[in-house]
Image (tube, rainbow, N blue to C red):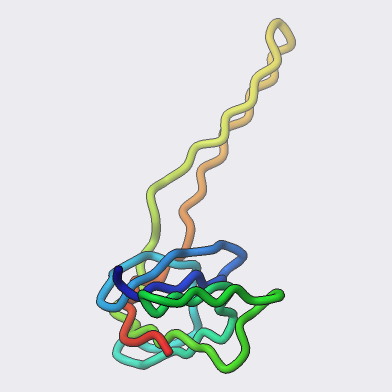
Length: 104
């Protein structure tokens, strides 16, 4: 079994493995920089599983920032029938594309 970790960033939890590429909420780092994520909720070495209460002590995951981008457009549309009320709002979330460099 391979090593993995469960990390929390941007209010969301992700199960990550080394070399994995994923989109997370916007991080304040330039492309090419490494970011340490200290909020490791669970850590598996392949043979042993450590679960934090709430985080695993002395565990960290290092992300390498690839780029910043904007996500898909989400449309919010509200309507009340027979009242002439319509409201349409679009939103695009700012995202950071990262790869998992190491799990320790």
